Image 1 (tube, rainbow, N blue to C red):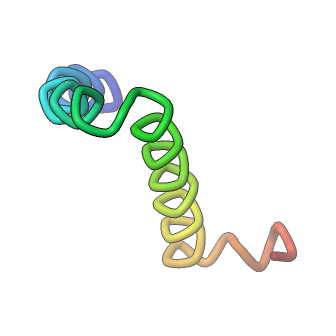
Image 2 (image 1 turned 180 degrees about the vertical axis):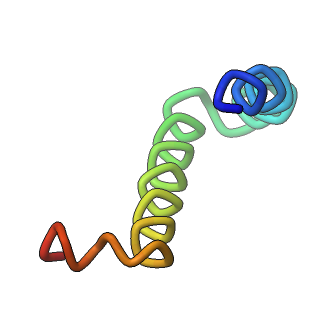
Length: 56
């Protein structure tokens, strides 16, 4: 399942990130992508109930 999601997500992400990097610069795109990744991970932890385990 992980491999299937990764193989679908990586090319789609590249298609979106390419034009954004041309317009805003690669540093801005990587920074925003990193914040989105950590925000999504925190949301998943919160929804799954595991955030209490990690004392956030």
